[in-house]
Length: 438
Image 1 (tube, rainbow, N blue to C red):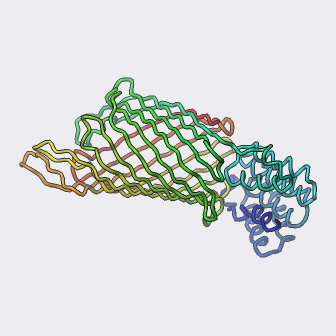
Image 2: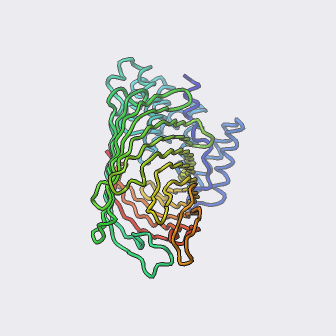
Image 3: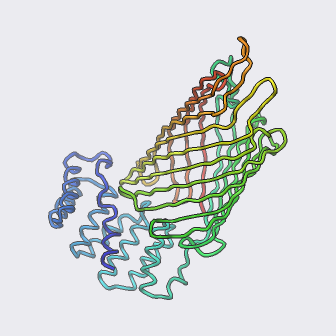
C-alpha cells in the first residue's frame, strides 16, 4: 500500500512554477530549487526551499501541493494535512481530500481516513480518483463500497447565442455575405444501464441545435444516441459500442447514420496530469430523398493528448477522415463529396483564478477529394481534383460560478482556402453560452 500512497502523492511534483502569477523571481527560483532538491532525495532542503518560497509571497496550488507532499514524506502528517486543506476551495478539491485521507492512514486514524475518502466520492472527482478512493474504502471496510456507490449518470445542458458573419459560407469572391444571429442549445446525458465506470454498459444521448431566427434555411438539429461497453484494464479504459445519428437541415430530415465505435483512454502518458485517447468510428450514412449524393460510408480516427501542469491545460488533437460517398452527378457537372481529411488542433487554457480561465486554440485541416470535379466554367468544362486547406483560430474565456455551472465567451475564425474558388471562404463567429452540469 505504501507504493500506492507514494505514487498518488508524487503525482503532481513536476508541476512547473513558471505559471505562478505576479510573484517575485526569487520566490519562483526557490520553488524550482525545492523541486530539484526533492527529486535529488534531499527532503530537508526541499522543505526549507519551499517554505522560503511561501515566505517570499509565492502562493499557488502547485506550491501548496508539493509542500504537502514533502511534509508527508518527512512524516510531518499534521503539517501535510493542513497544507492539503488549503486546496479544498479549489478545483483540486477531490485530490485534496484524497491526500488528507492518506495522511490520516499514515497516522492510523481510520475514522478520519474513511471520512476523507468519502468526501472524495462526494466531490464529483474524475474516474481515476473514484477508483483510488473506492479501493481505499474497501480496504478500510469491505462493506463500505455498497454505502458509497459510484456515480451511474451524468449530464450537461448548455444554452447560448451568438453571431456569424458568413452563415451561407459564401466564397471570398462573392459581392456580399449573409450574416445572422443564432441560438444554440446542447444537452447530453450518460447512464450506466449495467455496472459502472470500471466495467459496465453505458448509454449516451446528445442533442444539438443551432437556430437562425432570420435564416431558417441554415438551421441544424442533431440527435445522437448510443450504447457502449466500458472496461478498465491495465492499459486504460477500453470501450466498444454502437450508435445512431439523426440530422435535420432547414427543419427537414436530411440523413440517418449508424456508427460502430471503439476507443481507449489512458492516464499512463508522459507529463503531469496527462491523458491520452485514441478512438475509431465506422459510419454508414442513410440520406433522405434529396440528399442521395451523401449515401455511403465514413471512417474516422481520433487521437487526443492532454497535459495539465499546474494552472495550465494543453491539448493536441489529430483527426483523420475517409469518406466513400455516392457523390453528386447532375448530368452536366460532377461534384465529389468524398474527401480524405487530416486535421491537427492545438489548444491551451490558463486558470487566472479558481473561477476564471482564458483559452486559445489553432488548427489546420487538409482535405483531398479523390474523384475529380467536372465543372462548367466560362472557358468550357473544367476537370479538377479539389483540395482545401482550412485554418482555424479561437480565443475565449470561461467563468465558473461553481464546479457545475459556467459562463463562456468564444471568438472563432475559419479561413478555408481551396483550389476551386467557389469553396474558398472565411467566417467569424462570436458565441456566449451558459452551461450547467449535473
